[in-house]
Length: 201
Image (cartoon, rainbow, N blue to C red; front, side, top):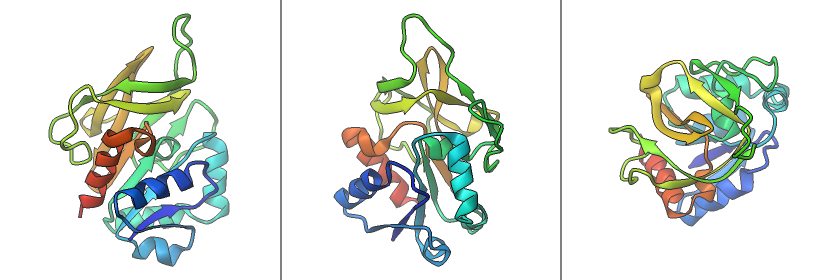
């Protein structure tokens, strides 16, 4: 069973539907017992970094997330869910979960490219990543964001894209996985990424 962490994030249902589509049982919950008993856990998210961290604290989910990761369960952050795993964001003065080292920065203003970055971009994939196994180089995935990850540990970056600047589009470290893009909105490529995550033991 896959648990989707419920902290009022906007893309909960679309993640759930994508998992059901690939034949996986998924539940949206903030119950610590259910979250800790799940085989895989997903932290989705759209919106503001500070608001999201406040919700995680209010629902007493921060320590639950730490426990799940410490237990070694496969854990996937999506979009804002990726950003929350890191130390700090330009968007607010709020500390992130700090599970991974790096900062979330504002995409620089650009006369030719619109901010937020919204739409399909191709990704460059680091060889050997489990999350992106079988995904072709330069595959297109769907992004919606104004802030981007600059990871401190480059070896943890599973995929890159270019939009005004180099964006760390996916990360992978032990049982922790995350995507800045939305696999649940990225067609067959995104569904394969979700299948890859579910396959991780």
